[in-house]
Length: 201
Image (cartoon, rainbow, N blue to C red):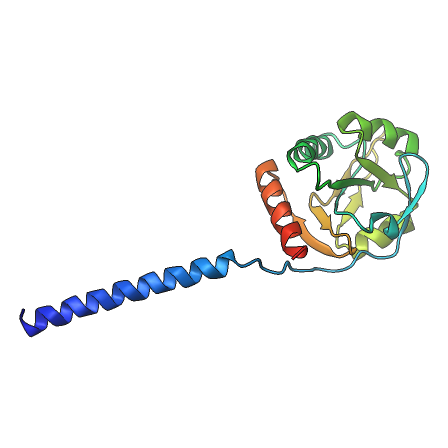
């Protein structure tokens, strides 16, 4: 075989070997569980839940929680998201339950009784809570979840602009993920399961 042809053949073999080695290394790296990112810690807070009982940050300890901001008079985003969360709740393994907490930022209209009726429409296992304006602001401000009360019309009806993100809180009260809309049940199921597996080692 001429020298130039042999050289080309060797270069091709070396290149293919390098590609194969790189692909193997990439595969090995991706097979190793990556430690999930922690954004911030849930602040000290006090709210009243849909059963009229007081809850604090300690109520979330020891379980994975998906927190969602909204209000019961929300015309579209809230019912759509809670319906999706009901589907997600059914998709996740029974041995790995996920607590869903709906926090109303409209305490003037959302009493515990109304919250109880509203949240049970979607899933009996879901929880809802609200509080005074300062209590709500303490929680939402620390979690970087903005909202804004709109101007009421002539009938006193108003809308509330609020974050559509889902906040994943770990049993250690750390925030592990903000899921921004649009939401997908399949993607949420995969990502939440991956984060929990990685956090559990």
